Length: 246
Ligand SMILES: Nc1nc2c(ncn2[C@@H]2O[C@H](COP(=O)(O)OP(=O)(O)OP(=O)(O)O)[C@@H](O)[C@H]2O)c(=O)[nH]1
Ligand SMILES: [Mg+2]
Image 1 (cartoon, protein in one colour):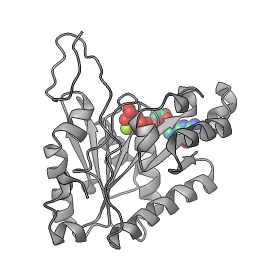
Image 2 (image 1 turned 45 degrees about the horizontal axis):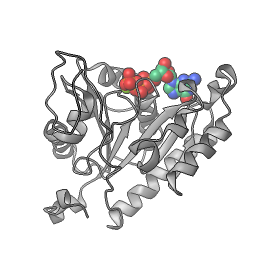
Image 3 (image 1 turned 90 degrees about the vertical axis):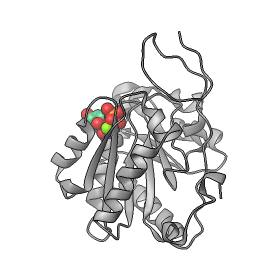
Image 4 (image 1 turned 45 degrees about the vertical axis):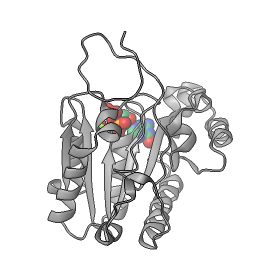
């Protein structure tokens, strides 16, 4: 258990599983959440929290997907670089998650989508119990080798959009193998929403995390802090980790 979790109360231990979904812009985070809602909502009670910098675009996409009661989808507008709200000060997200949990009690799973960011963003274990990091074949076959905390240590790495591999000249098998070698045995799923077997693998992973959570065996792990990075002059944000401004 991390120190951030040291004050967990028994009621927190009994609450639903909180799953973070993060990864670079456009890799398919909202689509994956829509997929999970479609596959799981028949037998699980689900809530969703989305994060966008300036809009509620992701929440609107998910509501229009018709896979979940729109009232169960909440948007947090971060107004700053997205990792601030999922890592440095998670208050707004925790409030959104807890409101959903209270209003639709008991929820089995709450999915939290981070704002699309770069390869370095990860969730704080104070916000989620387990996290999925997404990359996609369209971002290039070498992305998996580039590493970073999410690729290396997220609870699950998804290599998404494998159906596009032939069009972008990427070998998804090599990409998964490269990812596997930096992950020291942590799971990797090659996913396409058009490949039912891969969707089933994702659903199986979620159900197994839920079982571990309910049995008290799931200890939230921190993939690690983000790497030093830069923001453009005048970009407003408040997080406190070490980095320089251009
Ligand atoms: N071909 C293909 N396209 C996909 C798949 N999954 C998602 N996409 C497409 O990828 C694009 C981006 O998907 P989103 O789910 O919006 O990605 P996102 O990561 O939530 O994007 P941001 O929130 O803007 O960072 C959309 O056009 C999706 O239709 C897939 O399995 N195959
Ligand atoms: Mg999205």
